Image 1: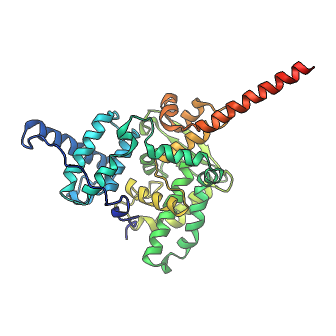
Image 2: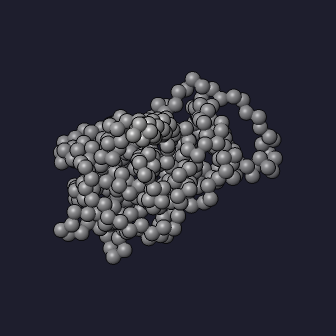
Image 3: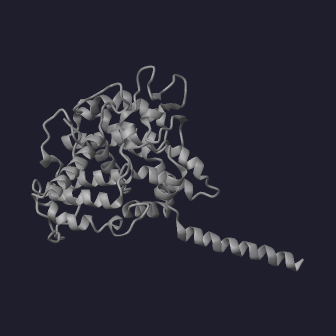
Length: 369
C-alpha cells in the first residue's frame, strides 16, 4: 500500500479557460531544439530534486504531466529550494511555457489549465512573494485563531491520527490513507512549526547513529536537533532544542511516530529507511499528506508556506528582530525580510496613527501643567 494521492488534478484548476494559440519558431531550428532540451532538462531536474522521479527507473513522462507536478517545480524554483542559483523571472516563465508545451502531448487537459496558471501575479509583475504566498500570509495575520491553529498543527494532527493508528488494522483503505496523511503531517509539524526547515531537509534528517540529526535523550523533555552546514542550503549549521509549546509537545509526538505510526507508514513506502526520521518518506509523500492534513482543518497551505508563516508571525510582533528570524530560518536577513516575511501594512498604518495620537495626548497633557 502506498500513501494515497490527495486529489485528482482536475480539481486543481478549472477547465473552462482555454489557452491562446502560441506563436512558434521553426520546430526543427537549432535554437528551438536547444530550447526544448533546456526546458525539459530543467523540469526533470526539478522532479529529481523533489523526489518525484527515480533515476534508477524508466520514467514515464505521462506520470509527470500534471498541474500538481508543474506547480511543485514552479513553487520550489521561485522559493530557491534547489541547489542551483535561482533562475531569473524571464527564464522561469520560458521554462514553464516549454514545460506545458512538452507535457501537453501526454496530458491534453493541461491546455485548459495553462492560461489560468500564467495569470498569477508572479508573471504580471515582479513580487518578492508569489500572489498565493502573499494572500496566505495576509489571511493568516488577520486571524488570531488561524495563527494559534498553525502553531499547534502538530498536536491537531496527532489528535486526529492517534486513535486511527491504534485501530489501523480495522480501518478501510480510505481511512488508512487519511491516517497515514495525518500521522506523517503530525511528525512533520512537530519539527517544522518549531524549526522551519526546508521540506527536503526534513526528509533527510536521521534518527540513528553517532552523526544523527535528531535526538530524543532519555529523561529529557526536549528534542535535540543537529544539522551540519553541508545539509543546509545557506551553509549554516543548525544546533538547537525544541520542547513543549502550548498544546504541542514535539517529543511526545515524535516518540509516538517512531513507535506506533512510522512502522505502518514505512510498509507502504517504495524505499523505507529506518535510519531516517520520516522513515524514507519522500518529498512527494510529505507534499500530498501536508496538503490533505492542512485542508482538513481549513488551513490551506503548502509545505514552503510554513517558512512564510513563521517569518510573518514573528515580523509582525512588536520589537521584532530580523536577525533572530533569519537565524531561525537559517537564511540571510535581507532574504527573509524581502522574500519570506509579510508585513500587515494596514495594521502598521493603524499603529502609526495610534502612535501619533499617543504623542499628541502626552504633549497636550504636558502643556496643561
